[in-house]
Image (cartoon, rainbow, N blue to C red):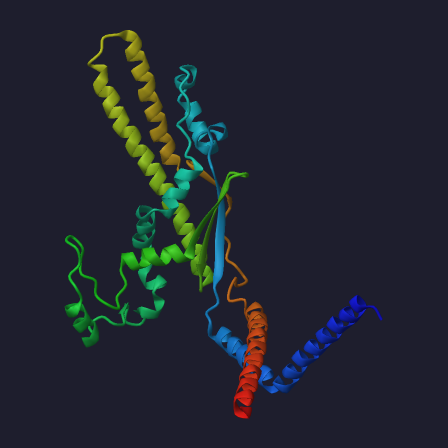
Length: 322
């Protein structure tokens, strides 16, 4: 037999021997491997059963563009009632951009309004709230008083927080975890989702966000239009040029139009394409996936432990022979 063929056959035999050795190690340590897998799988299954179910409620909105009527059908109807403003060539108020709406939804200003106006602290921190007494469980306890006394002084202008009693800052940090804002640039839509253990409350929180966003944007637009109107009216007495006066009148009319449209509110800055609906299925924990992942990871870990123990056993045997 030629030398290359002999070497090739020898390599094949060595590979077969190595694979057989590996299989023998697995068979030898099969009880250990099975034990590790069972412990990991059952532990994961038990832990997952104690995890709280989380539900997700969401809504899809789109910014109102100028071609949509500046403020929706109702706002467009109001604009038509202004009669002469259209003939003067006055444009509709500038529409809100998607980035502006997203930044508002993520802002502490809007979220603090949602929390305070709807009294969400007891709902968000339900484990620390005593529903029967309508008060926080740790209020008045000696441990809370001691911790409050020993806590470092806060920065100037900030009230000292009572340990165990959540405040607005705690709620804002929790909002960062449970509220998700996603933008679809291609379709020009914004998805607002809230994850919470109670599907009904999750749905209400999405509604609170939408209503507060509408109120905030309409009131802010009204405030700006009123400020602009006062400034423009003050400029009328400072000019005698009839052409400039006519332009100022046109600008004042535009501010009046904007102020009237803010009263409509519905579809003023955005349209709700898909309103929030109470979810009927949880989104997490995904118990089946957790168990499968635990099985795969435990299998690899168990095989590694088996080979490591076999290596230690062989090393100890060689040392004893010496």
